Structures are given as structure tokens and as C-alpha cells.
Image 1 (cartoon, helix red, strand yellow):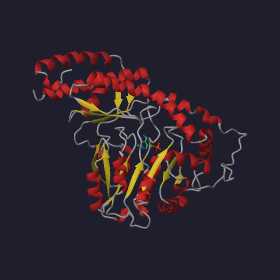
Image 2 (spheres, helix red, strand yellow):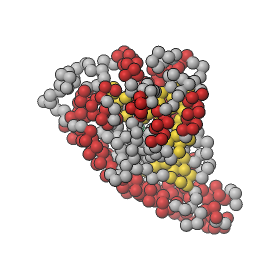
Image 3 (cartoon, helix red, strand yellow):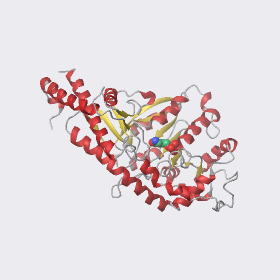
Image 4 (cartoon, helix red, strand yellow):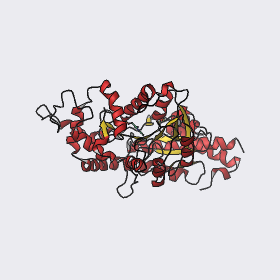
Length: 428
Ligand code: PMP
């Protein structure tokens, strides 16, 4: 492989015309492919279909506390579901509260409550002149959308292979009292698939924030979402770590079964210190008399315990692994050594993050669309949708079939090559 940079203008023009012919061929196939969102495929949803038979009209619907799950009550969630999610989130059962189906919804509520009522007695954020959040980039667009919606100023913090740039995080958090939080996806991060190293987690737990109401928003959405049995990442449990460092209230942890059971109908939870949970329950009591306990019961009875859930995740991995392999193999084979892009091979999660040459991402996504392939919009992985280098593209291989993915990966690499050649020709 010769790097494109090394090629002469004439060689690039020749290559361009060959690639354009290939591109026209795929375009003529009138394809409709979608690698834009991290949605489980129908085959994955079917893995949990038996859950629909767990509760029937003749089932005993009384939970461990002796409450009829059809009725009102049990604000925190039923005991058996709390145990299941506590084990999944690696925290004590008493440090967890179950909500509805969406963890994003809990994160939104958490920010909304902090805006209107403050955090454990502090000034409501809405009454402050300025509220800021740190945003490791690239990151999850829906996190950034929440903070943008509430007018919170977002500050980019670059990701490294071991997590966010902790020198920058420590410096900013310890000096600026307007910084109230940081968005983290600590395991198999969205979109890079990076897991924070032990050192990173230790440094998080040791933070000394200038703001007493600073919170780490630890969104462990992919905690048990491994792709391989023999190659798995390990993440230190942050709640215990913060407690050990004398900062038990500094973190909120979020998770859900969205990509374990059903994204539209799973169960979600927050884990936090006793003091934080007491604060949260004050609002929750006003907000609801209780969440959907039948769905909690269905999940608890279906999985039985965390071991059942871990077994279930292996079935997801068996479906996802070949899809990741196709994309990664195509990237390696077609782009390896060309010097026009870089990517990481994740061991879990839902995404592959691709970095093109600077200034090319938007054009690549547009080019792929010409041939019928929808990608996540370029820029989406940054606050305000603005990627300063215009280089990051999130690839979501879960939804298309293996056959579709082969075509999608081909269109993607062709688009990368064509856009990169145009970029290089500008300087030759
Ligand atoms: N957090 C992250 C990092 C995600 O990638 C996703 C789903 N794409 C969510 C949260 C959404 O979770 P939920 O379905 O529980 O709202």
C-alpha cells in the first residue's frame, strides 16, 4: 500500500477515475442502507421475545415486597428488579432507584432538577449566570443535546486511548466553579469503544471540584455489552471508588437494559450515594406514584439473575461480532496504510469511530448518501454539532444485515477514498 499523499497528481487523477467508475456501479444499484443509529437489529430483538410470555393472564403478579404489581406503589422499583440492575451496575441494591424505560430520560430529569431546584440544597443552576459542562469528544450526541437544550455551555475535552484528557479535566474542574458536570460513557464509549483505564477512574474519584454541586454523569450504557468472550475490557466501579476517596456524592451512574432486552421497553436506573438518592426521591415523589412494575417483574423473572443476563448478552455478541468484523476488515483491507483515515477496533459497545483527514467528514457522509448509505451526520459527535476538524464519523453496524453491511462498508470506503483524493488534489 502506498499512502495517497505520496502519489503524484497524475496517479491520483487516474485512481480517481477508476474509483468513480466503481462508485457509479454501486450507485446504479439504488441501495437504501442505514448505518446511522446504534439500534439493535430485529434478530437481536427476537432474542428476548420469550419475555413476552413471562407474564400471562394467570400469572402471579405479586412482587417480593408483597405488592400487586398491577397497582400503585413501590417508588424505587420492586426488590427483584433492583437486585438485577444493582448487580448489572455493580452497586449495592440500596444505592439504586429504578425509573421507566430510558436512562436518557433519567439524565434529562437529573439536569432539569438541578436547573430548577439545585443539587442537595445548592443554588438552582438556572439562577446562576453561567453553567458549564465538560464534554469528552467525540461523544454521544444525545448527551450534548440535553445540555444544549438547557443553555449549558459545553467545553470540549479530547478523548485519549485511556479516557478523557485528565490533566485538562482536573485543571478545569478544580478552578472553575461554573463547571457543574461532565458527560462520561466510561465503557465501550460511544462512539470510540474506549474503556477508561484504572488510572483515569482513580483520577476521576480524586477530583477536587471548585463547585460543591459538581457531578460526574457516568453513563455506563455498555457495561456488559462485550463482543468477545476472550477479549473483554474491565472498568473500575466508580461509586465505590468515589466513596473511598471521600467524595461519595460526586457521581451519578446511569444504565438501562435498552440494548439487553428492548430499547423501546426496557428498564433504566440511576445509582448514587444515599444523600443523592434522598434528593432525587424528593422530586420523584411529586413526579410519579411509581413506574411500570409489570415490566420490572417481567425483566426480573425472565433473566432470573445477573448470570442469566450475562448469558443473554453472549447471544447479542454472536449476532454483532460478524457485523463489526465485516466493517473492520473492510477498513483494514481497503484503507490500511493509505494515510487517509484512522479508526479503533472496539471490544464491545455499538460503534466504530472513524477519523478522516481534516476537513473531509461532512463530504464523506454526503458522498455515501449519494450512493444510498445513510451515516450519522458528521459533527454529531461534538457539542453543537461542530467538529472543529471536520474529521470524525460514527459508524453504527448493528442494524443492517450482514449482506447489507458488506455493501455499506464498500460504499463507505469508496466515499472516503474519493473525498480524500479531492482534498489532496487541492494541494498538488
Ligand atoms: N447512553 C448512551 C451512551 C447510548 O449510546 C444510548 C443509546 N444509544 C443511551 C444512553 C440511551 O439509553 P436509553 O435507551 O436507556 O435511554
